[in-house]
Length: 163
Image (tube, rainbow, N blue to C red; front, side, top):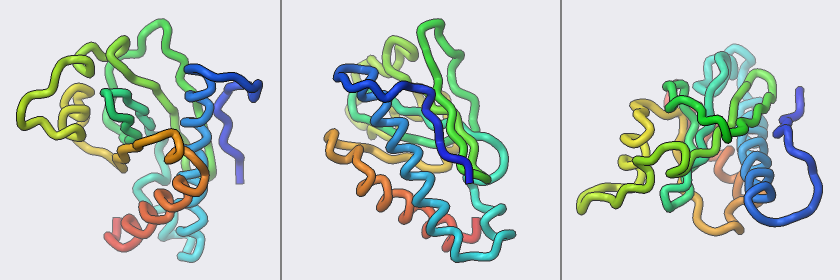
């Protein structure tokens, strides 16, 4: 198995870079738990899982809630200041992109009266299909324990649906 790499150094510090590292580590832990759960099944079943195979994008969206969603749909063009990160845990390969109103201005627009946060984010990004879509609350939900539960639940949902 290949370890996930977020391309960031591990120097201590706060601010946006520390949050980016924490979020990339959360995504890697989520995917590791997903695979750990799936490993109890036949290899051909694992290869058929929605996250296996072709690379996908994990969009981490501040809108203002924190959304983590996996998709193979195209995202808005990358801006010059964006620094995507990549990860791999065979057979999963993903790119992490951090999106906020500086990258996608529509994310900063006030929501309509009936706008659900999930639907609003998907519409702003032009995404029709997701592999998963999580909304995270506090920084405490970025820990490996939460990621393990999210990854296990996601794998069980994918395995149970026959996807």
